Image (cartoon, rainbow, N blue to C red; front, side):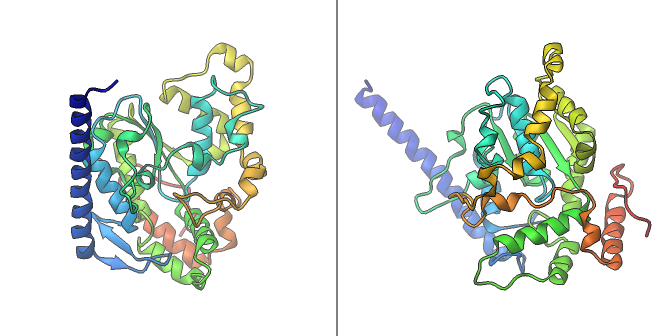
Length: 343
């Protein structure tokens, strides 16, 4: 039973925590009006903060993470992506790899739960609501989280300690996927955003967590400098050799497959469980189900085609050439590249 003194100490500690969070909220309220704004893909504007375009609540999440995520551990794992680069699929693969000794494949959580509900969204978790709820320190440890935040907006205590897996994708396919997604989840009272308008925004870097090129370069450079803490993969490579990358992911995450697991075909079982065909046809991922964290997005919105090269069915040759040229110019000299069409 708690003594009066211990109860008082607990109360004082909570007041201190609340006060520190209020300071972050105040900082956010002061910063927000000073930032450049541009038309968003949704009903709200995006703001530019330290070179990246964010929704205001993503900025708040970044500030909260920097101010209050103070004790990361080497066992913590963060899946990082720019939006629409394959994060739903990689969430599933990594969750299955990490928890393969906890669940069997017949009753696996992925069969009844959307991957986004199994892996908390870092900056989305750290949002403010009317009661100022949501605390970094309430997350269970070790953490397996996903994030869209650029590498440069994360605290050094995090980037120097945790393990990151980053997946990138050909910007042409990213744009097409993003345009479809945004029109699916756009409020019904707003007209659809046109393909041409969205293309102009995307190519200028005015996109959620964009520019996508700077986002990828941040993690690419980090992976070159610290390969033991940042694993950088391409969506196209994982699609082509999924089993190979499942093994690479397991090795990087410190849970390599044993000889017995290889003999039992565990890698292949994970690949089948997490395949686009399997996940997209599960009842849970075909339903219109939203959550408090993502009230306008249903489970089915996360599954469209999952194809490589679908951009050819949407982009004009001039549009494809423009994005390819931006990609070449941005990545020049970095060692990062995509198999792009000749321009």
